[in-house]
Length: 247
Image (tube, rainbow, N blue to C red; front, side):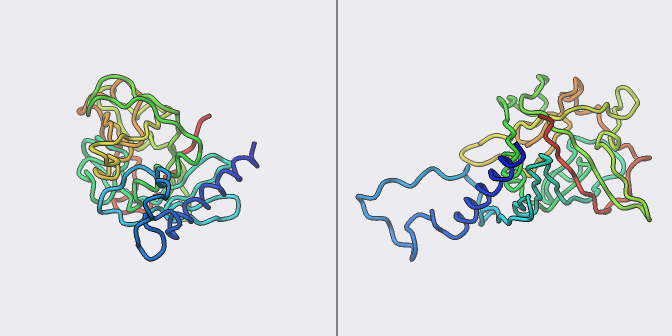
């Protein structure tokens, strides 16, 4: 099983490297159009908005693969994303957004491309479910389960905690319950990958544009979630987010 995961990682990395080199680019070398009798090119990855001008860069690292800024370990079935602590107090709707996303309501932020995170999680074999209708949809999101861990350096100590430790449920007045989050895989909107467009990555308050969503009953309530100030490091602290496949 481990060998199959490593081989799959190597295959996907090779495919991405081929895409980067232009092997499947329309028109081939030199940018000319293919002759009329040529068969149509195979379907590529989901459409990418204009601000992302390159496909994710893939690099083999030991038994793992680096997809853009995300390190994928297919044996442990986990992906690590470099982030930083974005908020230390206040109301939350997201656990993670991109650097140009809704930072005014997100615990963490990252400069990694959303498309890189999506490709990395698909590489782990995760499958999304039917997307919710809209933000705040009270239904439970569908998709494969993942666990979220955060790690940062605090003096001589390395903190390694479940992400729920940094979030407070204001309705229950206690830390967010540990849970398996849901890989929904975002959705396409007018031919564009919604997470890439909005930079919404991990939703605490349901958002179908996010790649990962909150399964708890209060996930449809935008007044329920707050930063757990007493457990969070200072704003700007470098944090590593680990996304771990559960099955």
